[in-house]
Length: 191
View 1 (cartoon, rainbow, N blue to C red):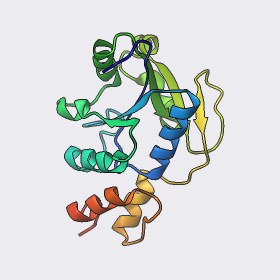
View 2: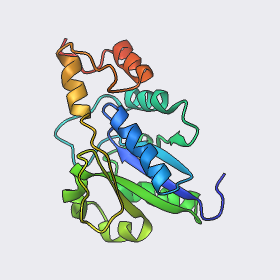
View 3: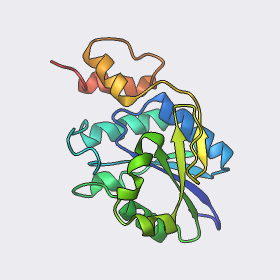
View 4: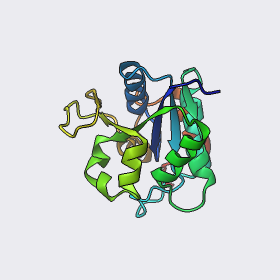
C-alpha cells in the first residue's frame, strides 16, 4: 500500500550476484534520502551487458530475496524478470508510476554505469520521471548534478564470481543465505 508522497528507491541491476556492497549502499541511500523503502529489481537481461549472460534469473531472484529477507524496508520485485527480452529502465519506471502515482521515485545507478546513462532508452523522458541517485563504491563524490551516496567498498560481483570459480572464499563479501544458494545451485563454477 502506498502513502501520499511516498519516497521509493528503485535499485535495478543484474545482481550477479548480489553482495554486501549493494546492501550497504542501499541502506545508506535509504537513510540519507529518507526513503520509505528500496525495491530491488533484477534485470532479466541487461541491455548494456548483452555480451555476458548472467546466472539464471530465477537464481539471482532467490539470492536477492534471501539477502534482504531480514530488512523490512527492502523489497524484491521480479517485474523485469517476468518481461521477455532486455530489461529497459523506462518500462519499469512507467510501471511504478502507474502503481504509485503519488510517489517520488529515486532510481539508483552505479557509478560504473554513469558514463553510459545518456545511451539509455528514452533517457530524456526517464529523467522527468525519476530522480537519479549515483551509488559509488569508489568512495569518490561525482560532480554530475545527481545526489551521490558514496562509500569506499571494494567488493564487486565480478570479483565474487572469479573467486568462486577459483575456489576461494567470499565470506564477508555477501550474505550467507545468498552464498548458500550459490553453492546449492552450483553457480559461477568452472566445472
